[in-house]
Length: 128
Image (cartoon, rainbow, N blue to C red; front, top):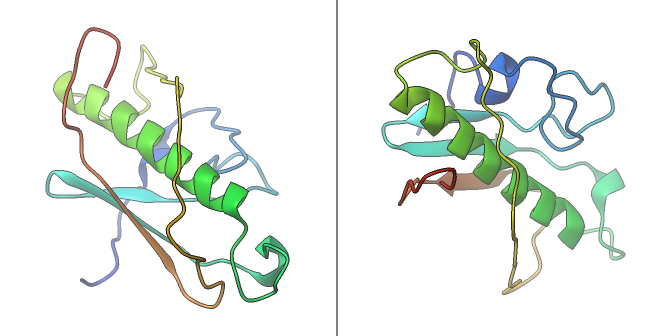
């Protein structure tokens, strides 16, 4: 897949100062998520400062943050989509993670891009 262009969900969210994905946070990770059909995709390039201890593995907390941010931003973008309006338009829609459990199957190399995919499987009241 050729890498995505256009506005990332996070860049359209006004006042997004999240450390993982906020465009307004100058020291954050700056994760960017895009629609690719019905799937939200993101690619993030780690730096050595995000090492887990061994300099060649990505820190698990960074991985959890990327998953959290990509999931929340996918839910937010989907909510705007369901209302047939652009991300960040008034009234603003914000979601927060209620629960997150990550099972790490193997170390993540720090010298390669991290690719994330998310798809909304259910919408119930105020939960996506």
